Structure formats: C-alpha cells, structure tokens
Length: 194
Image (cartoon, rainbow, N blue to C red; front, side, top):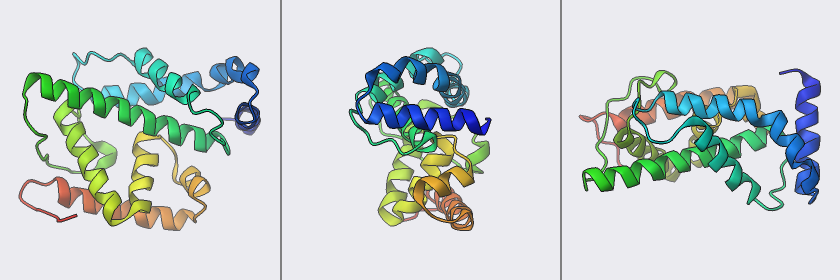
C-alpha cells in the first residue's frame, strides 16, 4: 500500500474521530478492499457451507465500526486492528450460536500446529481458539493482543509494533511465545492451566 494512501486513510480516520461524518464515504472507499480481503481470509478457514458471506461480514463489521463513536482512531493500523477484533467477535458469536443450535455441547480442544497455517477452522475450532486466546490474555495480555492483531487484524509485525508502541523484536518474541503457548493449550494431550 503506497505511503500516500496510508496517510490519506489516517487523515480520514482522524477527521472521523473528530466528528466529521462526511468523510465516512471516502473512508469506506479507501478501506473496503482490505476489509474484504481480511474477511475473506477468515471465511476461507471456515467450512464451505458457512452461512456468513464475506460481504455480510464486512458490512456487519463496518456497522459496528461506525458505532464506535469518537473511537480516537490513531492511524490505519489501529483501525484495521479494531476491525479484525470486531470480525473475530462476529465469527465467534456466530460459531457459538451455531454450536448451541446444532449440538448443544461445549467447544472441543483441537490439535494446533501453526497459527499462521491453521487449516480450515470450523465453528467449534474457532470457539476453542477464542477460548484459548482468552486464557492467554489472562496470562499475558500483550501476547494475546499480538496474536489478535496478527491473525485476526491481518497486521504485519511492524504495524503491530506501531499500534502497541513496542519494538518489532518484542513483537517477534511475544508472537513466538504465544504460538507455543497456544499450541500447548490447544493440543488434546497437553493441558495448560490458565
């Protein structure tokens, strides 16, 4: 993404945070493609017959973003981090509802190889991942935030460092630790107490 485009998005977000609702249409045009790709990457991990479509996920997320009245957007990385978190919540809530409707059971733990290459996440697996991230948050809130920003927000390590105000090296170390922690938590024969 060219630097001028990033600056444009940041300027629009700052104006929007200051209460200028007239910039909303411009902002949508600037961020829609990335939000759509982000939503598509989430849904590609879901089962094929998933009832939530990419455009619907983007629209629902944007409606919730618009409701973030005066969110104090710092820049485009902050915006996409929040958008990723909102999409995660929408998908997890959808998965929990589906699980309760179909099975009436609790989420099961799943084998976990590598978060970046997580194969086709199904509803129960998404719920288990969400539970694992919540448990990680209790242990290490920053590591949990890094996973959320990277996996659900689609941010690079550099963008995460910028959003959290830490070094890229700290992001890398926390990311590696979090992946290991989540692997242990999500592996059936290893139990990690939160």
